[in-house]
Amino acid sequence: MSRKRTVYSAEFKSKLVLEVLKNEKTLQEIASANNITPKNLQNWKKIFLDNAEIAMEPSKAVKDYKEDLLAAQEQNEMLTKIVGKMTVETARYFCESLFWASQPKQAAKT
Image (cartoon, rainbow, N blue to C red; front, side, top):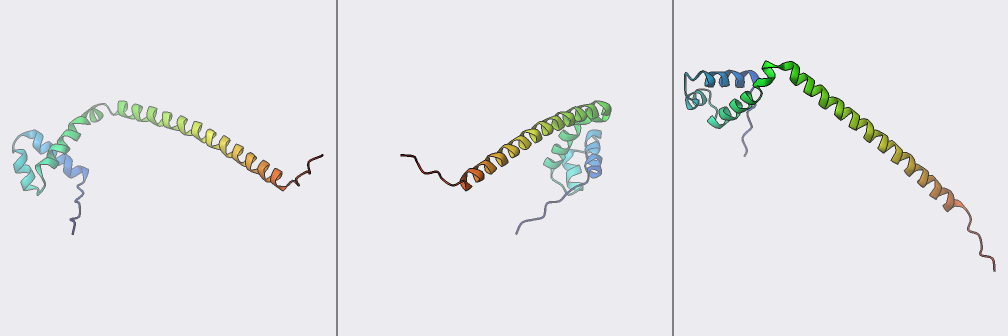
C-alpha cells in the first residue's frame, strides 16, 4: 500500500529555508527536527534562491508575466481564427457533398 504524499505549505518551506540560510544548525539537524528529508530542504533552498530575484524586483516579474500572457492571448486568437475558418470550410464541403449526393444521376447520352 502506498503512502500518502505530504504537502507542505509555502510558509513552512520558507521558514525552514531561512533557518538553513542562517547557518545556526546543519541541514541534517533541521530536517530531522521537522521530520522531513534533507533532499526536500535542498530542493526548497534551490527554488527559494532561484526565485529570490522576484522578491527583490516584483515589477519585473509582473512585466514578464504580462508579456507572456499577451503573447499567449495573441496565439489563442490566431488559432481560434484558424479553427473557425476550418470549421466553416468543412461545413461547406459537407453541405456540398450532401447536395450532390441527393441529385439524381443523369443517364449518359449515346
